[in-house]
Amino acid sequence: MKRGKLVLVTGGARSGKSTFAEGMASTMGDRVTYVATAAAGDAEMAQRIAIHQARRPAHWETVEEPFKVAEIIEEKGCQARIILLDCLTLLLSNWLLAVTQGEEDDAGSLLLRKDRFDQLLEQATSLARKARDCPAHVIIVTNEVGWGLVPPSPLGRIYRDLAGRANQVIAGHSDEVHLVVSGLPIRLK
Image 1 (cartoon, rainbow, N blue to C red):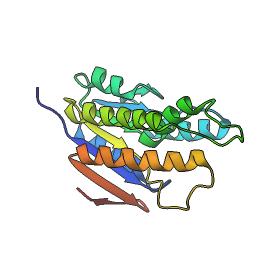
Image 2: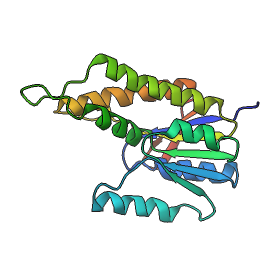
Image 3: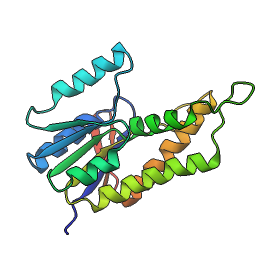
């Protein structure tokens, strides 16, 4: 079976990544499945989600899935022409928070066993493979979280490390990689 193209769109927060990825998806075809990984845990996040929803064309299918994205890509890969995943870093956050509950030591510091970190990275690798082998074109949006200060908390540092490693894995499997800075895309691969 012929596979589609895997495209990674990365950049900093509020850099224009999603808008660029949505524009790319629109030019690739009209059968778009938008996979949203955000969960509205508070009013501010609900407002952000509503802005993203309002921006998308009404004929796009939206699947809200905070955890099992690889399965959605497999399921929708033969039905959709384009799958837009927004975003990988929220998915990683969902996965990380799910496995770190109750992982504090006696002093309250977060502990994440290496095998659990490796398990999360393997989930990202599996996602990359399924996205690469999908018959539909897959566009994955992610954040570059390592360009700022070193996070002050153990969880923040683990998240930064996981996102950096997962981004490298996805980029390695991608046909194209675009960096968006101040709304301007730069093709890296």
